Amino acid sequence: MRILVIEDDGKTSDYIAKGVTEAGHVCDVLADGRDALFTATRDAYDVIVADRMLPGLDGLSMIKAMRAAGVKTPVLFLTSIGGVDDRVEGLEAGGDDYLVKPFAFSELLARINALARRPPAQEQKTTLKVGDLEMDLIRRQVTRQGQVIDLQQREFSLLEVLMRGEGRVITRTMLLERVWDFHFDPKTSVVETHISRLRAKIDKPFETQLLHTVRNTGYSLHAPR
Image (cartoon, rainbow, N blue to C red):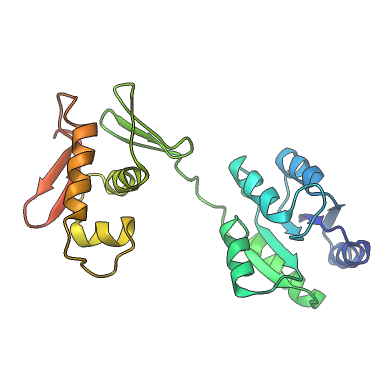
């Protein structure tokens, strides 16, 4: 197994490298976040162990950039920042596991081995398409027949939910939960209002209707059948 350790504390990186090597693995060590980003996007590793506080580029920004570049290597954050919010922030940035300093090397090695055993992550879609309607999730752009459609943030989120559920009926309750994070009925017409605005933008200027109302149930987005 080939492991990249990104740690600017020399004693810690030497300790990890020694233990990993003794366990029969190949270990590369870097101390700078920018250098690590370049190396991780150029070379293949089985697991990356990264400190959060790094010179050049902090660990969170480095992992976000790696993920944006398509690097799917499992990442274990190793850091002295151990609050719940900090752990959540690290995982949401693209990390796969979190170990707080000080740590036992046996636990570190066990977590590295566990990450290496995980099946490869499936390719994440960056575009959605329903008929001639396309959504670019990276650029946050929607087009139909090559024409850019200007959507507000909430309209974009609403359309994304509908496109991901192509052909299925998406209920009003589901939309309230997924788009507005309401886990109760606010007794307003917020869904209907946004659906009307969305329909005016993605359907009315075009010949073919994609957004359909399913009476007393919800909505469905699909090409003509």
